[in-house]
Image (cartoon, rainbow, N blue to C red; front, side, top):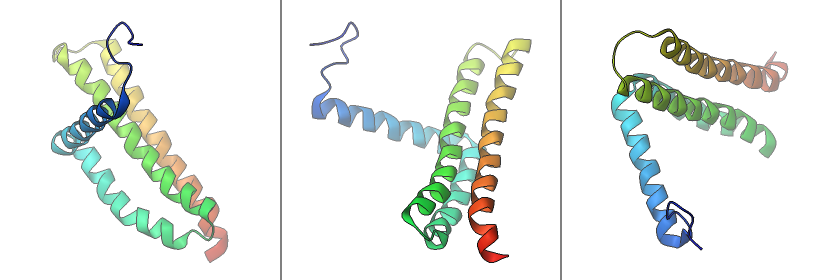
Length: 126
């Protein structure tokens, strides 16, 4: 049964379309967002380090997953900023507030990375 917008049923072809759109989004973020590129570079370093330093599978998931959350939120923040910019470059209080809140969300998840890594690794190595 199809919904009003023709998205269902998805099936294998629908999943492939969704995967393609996701890859296009990742490519756009890589090409247009320097913050995303920097965070990917950090993940390339921290991902394997988290795998190596994690003593259990749960620790590995926490160490690596906390970094992936930063990337996901950066994608959301960038998408929100793109929508705001779509409506024009003029300054508006609500647009500025939305951009600041998106940036704050990324910052909070970066603090979460510090919290997770510090909580799991500091007691072990100090």
